[in-house]
Image: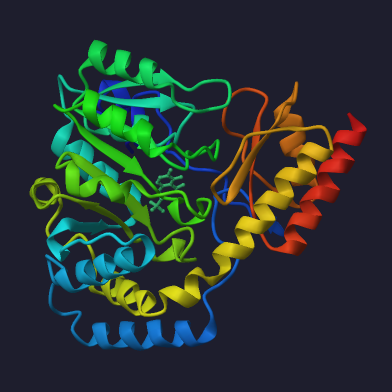
Length: 368
Ligand code: PMP
């Protein structure tokens, strides 16, 4: 009898040997505030519309889905027009299974061996993984103590590393920091040989009056703005992310995508949901208000808190953040151990969930 094969027996790429699958713990606990989901489930009438649309799609599941999904891309363009006043054709919009996959398409098309992707850390911890998986060199510049990006430092990093991809996250994960458009523009001016992607996964939660990087699209053919239906839209389970850019930029992504990557079920779900975007996004104001309350409460209780334009808050600082994270988990509250040493990140949940978080945190810190 042969021994069962282990990973060491398989010809795994050398650079993947010590790697682990990415992902926060998925635990069955009463209060889940660890992956920046929207705490509110999709309303029953929208669930019914999605189910109808999926049933209609199911009738045709013997056929491959619409490979170019221009109807969905038109619906997404219409949504961005309403949300940010962006004037986009369907050909300027791209979508995939979460903005994770959109970003992988970007790295597949514009990264690769001998090329560099640049971002500014602390930032979203999946970026180095997209780089690794596409054999792109990863360089992380720094963020300042308040987690903003210093324009001179950004220019200097671009000059030094000559990246082909620059990733800017606004609002940034895990810090919540929004970037002024002037910073994005300065990076675009300095990185004319690169593509610049502004990851606005949390864009809908930005403070009112703050413009989206979508405003810059008419002037920069190398700019892309990525968004997702996972956060503000309450649709993390549907896996729909999207991006707006020039038609040429989108055409580059069409080269590397797998044929039929977006299933007919996913397309139907997204289109049905987009008909209800106003209702789905109606929780955003409440979550923003609760975020600001949470920041005020944490500061009032002596914690350091990063300014947040997102649906989560980075707070600290703790000598032993793992002990605090564990103490909260022991009380049924799951948050995220991420970000710079000493900090923790909590997603904004319902009023009841945030009350449980506050009570648990006071108990844990009181015991230390
Ligand atoms: N970008 C950022 C900054 C994120 O925080 C996330 C999810 N945590 C994503 C992209 C990916 O989200 P999704 O694939 O669900 O669209």
